[in-house]
Length: 374
Image (cartoon, rainbow, N blue to C red; front, side, top):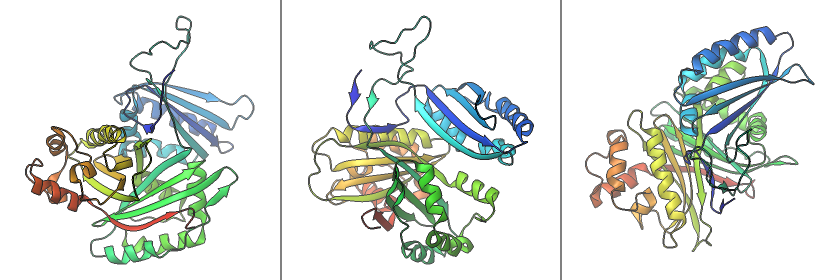
């Protein structure tokens, strides 16, 4: 079995996806849950890329259930799970489920009656190579604030006291990076261990709660974090999943600085734009001359954010910084990018517009705190 030594996370390898959802039901809510599940099955069956579902009940604890689903690949699942349709589909389950935990796995090898385990080249729908991770889960949240409130929100978000980094013996909050682009806020977190446990830990901290309450009046989407349903819907809609992460295997040539770049996609092209950037950053990781040391691409609908760790200045090599190194890449991005939304229209094959795009895409850093800072 071959192993890739650099890409630790990717939704773009073309392999089938197995999604596992663990649920803990309230007592007496089983029939309500089964009714909600049947409704959900009918709706998800028509979603492109969906293959099958299984519903299982624990033989040890009847309140514990398991839903597994198989998808042709990760992109169609991510497009559905982050859609408004999904938010509405799962609402009937909220009142009967005490707790949930979702896990997503690409299929690396498969055995069956006529398909013995083998080290031979897998089918095209299986993951080609095992990836080496770093024990870190990555996730981001994004939301918008009312125009005119940007400076006040930035002040509030920059001024909070960091919560304790150690969540439990197995989980640690490693880094939080927060950026703004106009009235859009993006908060990216890196967690060693259990991502969900870390997010819940942070949400319970009084210093974090105080900041969240302070920015509530400025949000474009109303929320009440004391109401579980309101909080659930807000954080579902704010989720900005990491679809690709890569770090070069080479030593960093100088100081590494973190930047965030915002790429609004044309309607329906967000996943394609994220895939383009992911492939470019994977290639950069193998290029000893590239200033791109590592990157994480986040995508939801037509929102794409690229968190990039660079050696050297952002504007020293604009094409590399934007993830556009190579023939035809600028033109490809031009077909996918909503240039009007970011204030850069016209050909991206001119030096002037590339420099303008880099300037307009560069997000304002608010905080970047590692566990050592905490």
